[in-house]
Length: 266
Image 1 (cartoon, rainbow, N blue to C red):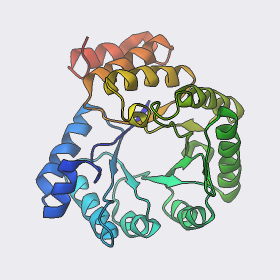
Image 2: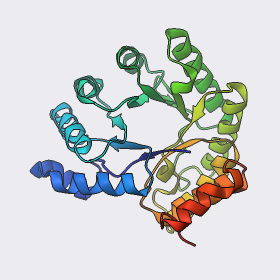
Image 3: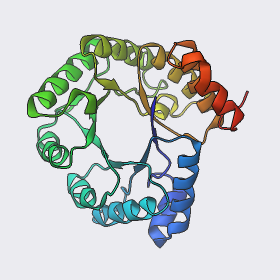
């Protein structure tokens, strides 16, 4: 299971404050903690500062790379910021979050992915429309996959995000997303699926419980990557247990090792 660690994000108060002060210490602490908790990729996001996103994303890349060798996921709504930060990435196989079927976004991100041989999070999103039903999500995913592979992006480098929406505003979204994951994985063997896990619980009580429940359901449909908080031990415990239950952990050795080293808990 590929884990993109989400905590270095300017939308979080502590990270925003660190960015305002250009204080590396909180960033370094988060990077080390997420690395130790089992992150595969460290997501870096310097948004919410108009006119400074490229500068801050580059700064984040430098700070995080100084304390961890984990590969980075560059997360920005501004393609110029991603273009500025990519040459600073020293780790292999960086990831871009994200590309979609909006013409401008697609045209600006695709050349960067090809040039730097990145992995791509591909959102099921078109011009002015977000997919809500499973069928819509699968159709948009198919269009993205066919265009990306046709342009030279290997199928193994594509991580399709069907976009789960908050259950408080769309109570069918989790079910539609899980169905879409199963449909995408069946139709395109070798592609990956991913989601921004915490979107599902936005605005609800017991968010962590909802997140864990959705994660296990999505994994049952074949989802093999997630954007999440790896320092949430209950969430990670559910992830390891689900991998064992679904037969992805031979002889449950990953589960046993994670329990022994304290990564997960009962």
